[in-house]
Image 1 (tube, helix red, strand yellow):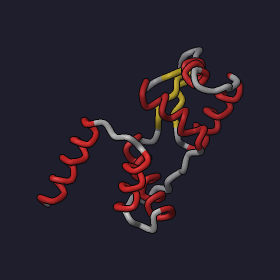
Image 2 (cartoon, one colour):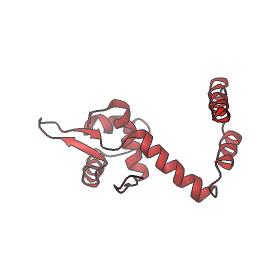
Image 3 (cartoon, helix red, strand yellow):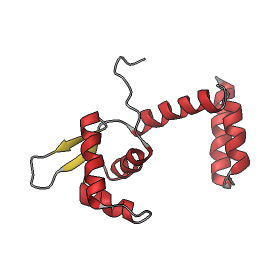
Image 4 (spheres, one colour):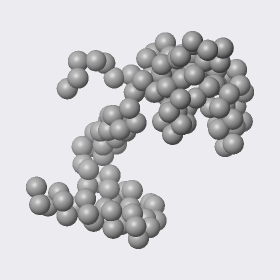
Length: 127
């Protein structure tokens, strides 16, 4: 386990991180425009959240140019792994089986998704 403390992003911070993970290096304006496609959010709110995220260590800000650009300071995979582990432990009593059954029971998986899941299961059986 890493000695660095994990900083749990809020739901709003996760929305911002998703945009940053997708685009890698973005301005506040770019993040705001992306968020505004799906929700009513003010530019200053996005700016303030990103400033807080920088202070918390979730993002890094490059202020060498007039427009500040942000990059993720936490990896998507590490964040997903941590949040999923926490969810499995708290909501599903540590049972990955319950999580998978719940997810597949409430979400229509495509044939491609089911094929990918089957590949993972087959690989796990081989180990």
